[in-house]
Amino acid sequence: MASNKTIRPTDCGIDEKAWALALPGLYFAIFPPALLLNLIVAWVCLRLKTNSTFMVYLKHLVAADLLMTLTFPIRGASELPGASDQLKMFACRFSSVFFYLAMNMSVIVMGLISLDRYLKIVRSGGILLCQNLLFSNLLAFFFWTALICSNTLPIIITSNQDPTNKPGEICIAMKTDLGLSFHKAVVMFAEVIFWAVFIVNVFCYTFIAKTVLESYQRSRGDNDKRKRKAKFRVFLILLVFMICYLPYHAIRIPYTSLQVKSNNTCYKHSLKIGKDFALWLSSLNVCLDPLIYFFLCRDFREKFMEICDLKRFFPTVGKNGEGCQSTDTSF
Image (cartoon, rainbow, N blue to C red):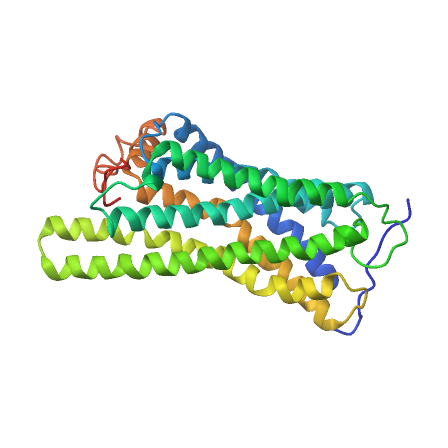
């Protein structure tokens, strides 16, 4: 098969060879720690009872992170100079598709966790339907099914063309005309999901901060200080969310508008490099998400210390903070 190559401008001031090695190197570097972390987290979660809505969402987030982690070797290998067209085509049609599925699901679950924290801290007076374990599980499975049916499967189906001797990126060359239109629609759909969750997060944390400040004003006792510190831990979700996902979604729309066109300019090439790096930054969430589990859920923290046999070295870790029960209003 003749290689499909993207004709790039040569006077953009970008070291092509260095970046061609750096990008796959970044994915290969993150894979071992990410796999180890997420296998440990998955093992811990399997031994925890699903007794709260937070635990429901946590387990779905773990599943999304593990799925994303397993795509790293293929993503890295397909970006190497001299990678075969067959490997690149497999990455375009399958590996990358599941990468985006995991990323979009992670964004959604982070929004659900934020909403769950808001309801338990700010609206802690009653039990709502969305705080029901069965409903939370059904909601999470609904989003998995919706993403697979509306994004994953259609992209796989419409990326079935032979890219031989076609100009442009190999992933775009594999798409049918319908696939190109669908590609832009899927990107816009992902953007809507992200910015909707972003708004939900800002709304939730604004009121969480207000509740924390009011709690601080009411009492300054040691016990209340401990509770306030526990509440502030939830802002880890917002921090991870913004570090990992905001750069990618800020650059995704302008890049996609040029991606489906055959023209090659320095601006388009620079956007691609920026998009590729921001996409790798998004993959860092699989290493940062365990911080959410460890600091926001005492049950997870204690089980982690028990399984790793660390309690004898850190006997007080896990005793502070709240559990993850559905009736808790803290963490």
